[in-house]
Length: 432
Image 1 (tube, one colour):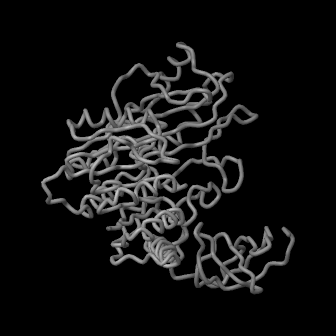
Image 2: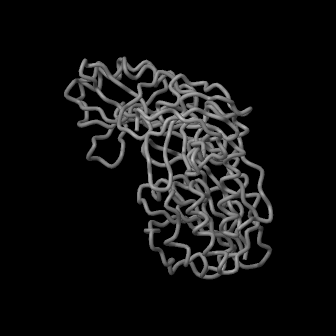
């Protein structure tokens, strides 16, 4: 099929991953690099029963929303898929993706929330890059090409916050002097508000002498060095320092974070999202204790801000290390009305200690959604349910359970957490 004669067609839509949709012979064809309203010359590289896959060879007639990508690595590195689409049009695409999903499920909200948006460049405070020592001994650092295991060497990345782009560019020259007996696999970069962490995953931990040489050649003054082997579950700091990494959630609440643990990568959107959640919460006026339950609570991203709105906040999380971090964060912020519990949320029936009326259930699940906890959420008869989603299709599946139980869709909207990608982050409010 690689030698197939090029074809020409009009692009009528975008699918969920940002590819253009054409129908050159009546059959859907998903075309990399094509935008709605364009006429493109393309070549098919994969034929399926119900659709074909292809890539653009030439844009015959361009969309008004087409722009020149800023990054020289686009689209090879696979990190960004929509740099050729104007940023405002990207947000419109994500809004339409959400609304289409909700409409198909007959879950249209009473209010469509304005999209949360922030600067389109320099937003990502965390990145994981693949590392490999080439046959000539040089170090290759970058993102893997879309659909393959090949590493695209990165010398610039415009979506990373400062100073991460400079660190990415300097990593190969620093790592090339590492002992050849240490096999490198990944490096995570994390830019907190007060320092930067370089976290390396490798075949073994460096000796004291090797570590001393690494630190001597590390030229970034605020950088911390963390390490773990492929058999370890958590990074450990190995540079001798003890300063914690902190990020701001609100003007008064700070979160301690570590490499390898989940943190929202777009700090500005995360702060806006927290503000939006607090604005959506319906304050209780009864004499009884008000209770919020935060499912998939992580290290306290929503639980801690909600503590100012409720008498009691209970955070539930499946990972022990995140619950320990959430408890620590509550203490550091002098928040005393939260409690955090480790529990498997894949098939959760609730906890005996959550008794009485629950006013709010907040869910922030992974891409797989929260199917295992939805029956319990229904049983709480909570006045409000707020669902934060990184995958609208699983969110819609879960919200249908609530709709069937009598909950109404009050509001929904998107959050542009990952500009220049096709990832759609959404928020939905349902009320009993």
